[in-house]
Image 1: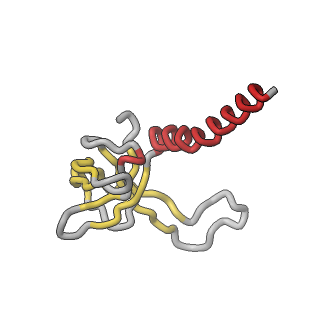
Image 2 (image 1 turned 90 degrees about the vertical axis):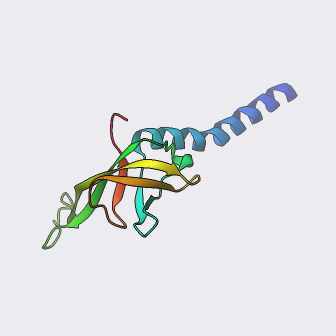
Length: 121
């Protein structure tokens, strides 16, 4: 009886302890995205890092949120925004778990633009 209780407790700890790691790994492997947090004198920095699975050499697409003029649909099936691709960047240095330095390889990315791992990388 005690052995069975210990096994159940260990299984519960393993499930709850591993699930955030598993979810983070799956989510960031397929959906890694963040934002440009700085475009200052030291270059462009994105809010994507080691914890997101970022690697030097990865190419990120850059999108800007554009608002449509006029009111949003009252039926809830249309959004007053869309994403417009404005360029791409390549990770050249990872600072830590949360931030990386990138080189702009296409377009003119700006602070607060969305960066997303290009599919197929």
